[in-house]
Image (tube, rainbow, N blue to C red; front, side, top):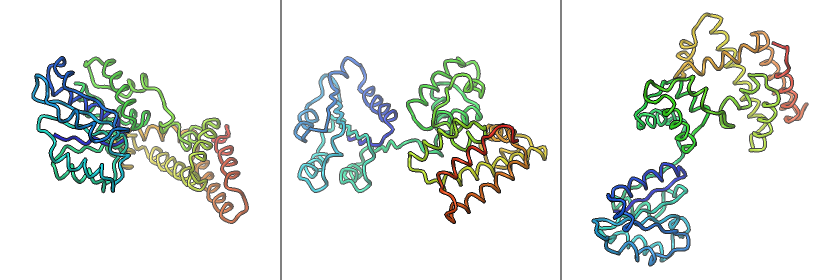
Length: 323
């Protein structure tokens, strides 16, 4: 059988490879029938030497080839020979072709593998929409449970890096010991903040009136190529959001009701915004919005440099004693 595993999510890829290896059964016999090859300097003949060999004291053998396909050009004889060979792969061999990057959709081997009804899995990064369900399922796989607001916080603090997420989830499940679900306070206690966490973002640092962190994040985002006008828009969106939740709170809506009105999955986001909004009065937030509009106009009309405007804005927004 042919497996084609590609994409940057190396943790998920390694799990699949471990599953394929485990299917061979007795580890002592399995080790005699598993071959791992570095495909970067390998020719098809080298793969065939192992793939064509009969399994020893077993029904199957597994040949894992890392990084073989990416260097191949689409018009080479080697690639054509590979596609032809895959059609005649011995039934007693599981050939696992592994690539650390996602192969282009028009890659000839992808099409050939599809025609052969091979197992093709694209292990892309965990996207924003699937991150929270992924966390919930991973916790469930460890025979544990996690509350929605704990999922929300864990996603915000760690982001979509699978290896780090798994490590933190395992730590949390060991901590609760199966006696109860993982709760928000468990995540707050055990999971460290990372640079990817939303609380360390520019707009959140401003919301917390943390000037040092705000300047650090401003420089980081500019170094990463973010446009100053895009950052200005992000700050404006943050201020509007603080105004909205502060207004709802003054109308006596609970965090749960605010989260529902905003379409958030849990009340954690509402509590975060309320905590930040407490640093500002309604009048101050409205004043900041006017300031942002003035700076936007000044930049567009050339009256002030965009970088200088951002520096001045952060200084004014994070200045203490101006609630």
